[in-house]
Length: 412
Image (cartoon, rainbow, N blue to C red):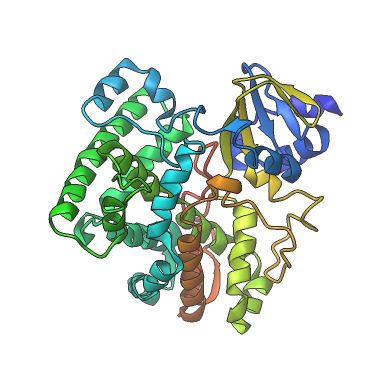
């Protein structure tokens, strides 16, 4: 049996496209697994052990892990490009307590319940506008006509980017995601590095504008935020937080909505339940998050020699936690591969992570997605897959999981 997992390449394109069989084998045979041929790299597949890793930041560090710019930092040309901007600073995703606590408290002020609630009208307006653009055609490509532009417009507004330049949000976000995934060619890394520097200079100008003329948006909250010792965020810190909000504010939501619409199209019985009882939508969103797990994998670094499920993990080893696998763990979720909009979540899914690094934008993502599904299901009838047009390809990224395109037909 052990030979079965040893024949799996978890980084192979076909495994990234469809990881579920491989993850199931791993949960059964080696829920904590040392990757063959890679120095001190481990994957964690089970719900129990993913919780164990993410609940101990002192033992499994984020700060000492691979930086957000990935392998591009090993490229002399990329380093030359980055030198034209500001250095990356550990703030949220790649930070540990007590420093992480400082930034988390500051950013929490920008994501309060009241502030997210105030965005509802703008989210609804944007959803209606997007649906209006294709409702008479009887078909649409979900990603590019709806689930990409919706969160891009919302986070673009909050970062002070004019609507006519919202396309830059997606371009910058794609650059950061490409670097983070570390699966690009060096030429692609260089193109993304130029985008990073472009983003930094653009956002530095936005920060300066807030200081001279305050506004009512998330970016303004960050510019004027003060730590307990009355210090403001430095330029590098502001840019790093802005960068993470840019990515977190659109990638997860985009992939959730696209993947969620595929689940509905494949399960018309579940779609009918929600159309008949829209109060199920919040629970449906949680079920979609569990099954899709847009943030599929994240990394940690062991701070000392330790053991996990009896496996020796040496200090400085890279530990990849597979949220997408934990969310389909048979010991936690009954019939875990089934899409059930009425599922009772007695144990929470880990789609937004766990512990101190739980996604800061989770509340906003849930709000956007709930509004989006409500309006799509209200305005579009008999939603179904467009015959012959769907390839169901996922982006080639080990960390984030999402559909490239999804073509649907409907009756208006």
